[in-house]
Length: 105
Image 1: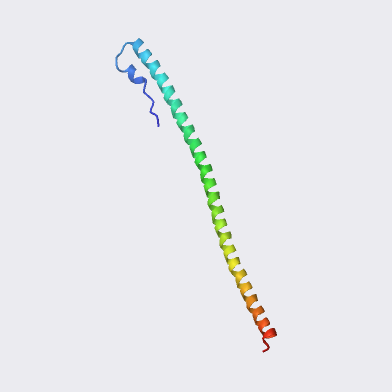
Image 2: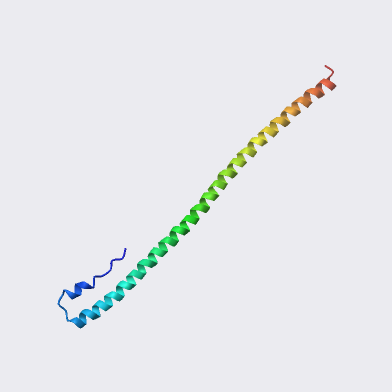
C-alpha cells in the first residue's frame, strides 16, 4: 500500500507561504502519481489473479483428462487380459474337441 504524504505538515513548520505553496503543489503532484501507481498495481494484481485462475483451470482440466486416460488405459489392459483368457479357453476347448474327434477315445 502506498502512503500519501501529508501536505498539512508544511503549514505547521513556519516556512514562508510561497515555499509552502510550492512544496504543497509538488507533494500533491507526487501524491497523484503515487495513487496512480497504487491503482496500476491493483489492476496488475487483478489481472495476475485472473491469469493464474485460468492457468489453474487448464491444469485442473488436464489433470482430470490424464486421470481419465489412465483409467481408460487400465480398462483396456483388463479387456486385453479378458480377451486372451477367452482365446485361451476357446483354444483349450478346441484342442479337447479335436483330440476327441481325431484321437479316437
